[in-house]
Length: 418
Ligand code: ARG
Image (cartoon, rainbow, N blue to C red; front, side):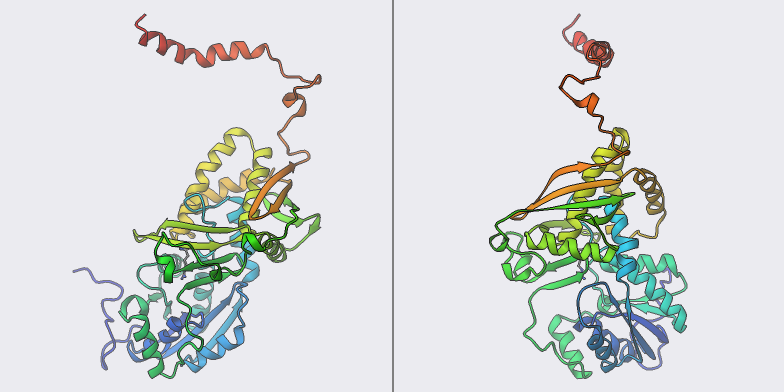
């Protein structure tokens, strides 16, 4: 049998080798990650659990979360604002890549994980931890993203995933927590599992597990229902420089403010909801609801500006590579070699993606109604026009078509038996 990283450390009966002495735990304040704290200490013999909770613009109060970790037995509770790097280093590259997993999901959750992992590793090194931990279960994508990212950044650190091994149901988890002094969730627990950050929300579980059941209106928080959207359409002009969004309606905004504003605008008009069955890394299909209003709006506008500014062959090639970029980010390979290679390609293409796109928001739709790019536009009016200024040499088309169609004509002639 091959020794695994965990082989020396199964469960914590007294006298067994502990898995780790000092552990940095990714902490959200929820039941699972809270229970991880006493579990790591009591069952796995961890001496010190240091929690880290990231502010990714989810809008939660962080001070109660910080205190809850201490109340749950953490020896140190760290909170950190990661909003700015989240948008600048993770969301904007995704916009430049027009990243849509399986053509639809803009990776709002997936993009956050490598950043959290990066910060966990930094903290682990600062505090001299020998392991990091997370509360992901064994059937989601997030465990893959954390584990691979941490392994890539810090191979010397162990990754502990108690919820992957403890085999407790939700009720058992809550009961375990109560025995350790962790209060059960006060309000009657929502049946949904929600992940939230500045890029959007993902909603799973409860009645949504039946892919044939329509999502109830109550699950949405960032987007209005069509019925509640304003009657009047609203057009927004999005400015881009080198593929990055930089302004809304002519006003230059820092990346975080820009995404916030895009969320508000698109959400107000009911744009950005998604109901899909997606293929998880671990091989199962799951039904997921997302609302990612700003991110979807920005990707849509960005794609449009590329249609004006990228050469045809570059655009086609990029569209193919974008799928691979989305796949690898979804699959937890942010710190891998393909990501680097694709980023180099994408960066090269984005130098000329400068200009503005106008999008009309109305009743759940975002419709592009205009695009413009000064010197970077490859749209040549003299070539495109049907008016008198037309400079296109129509007669040249004949010779081109002769050569272009030659293989087809030869093949068709053979089939006719000549
Ligand atoms: N299915 C989405 C993804 O894999 C959302 C996952 C939400 N994660 C969570 N822990 N609730 O990116």
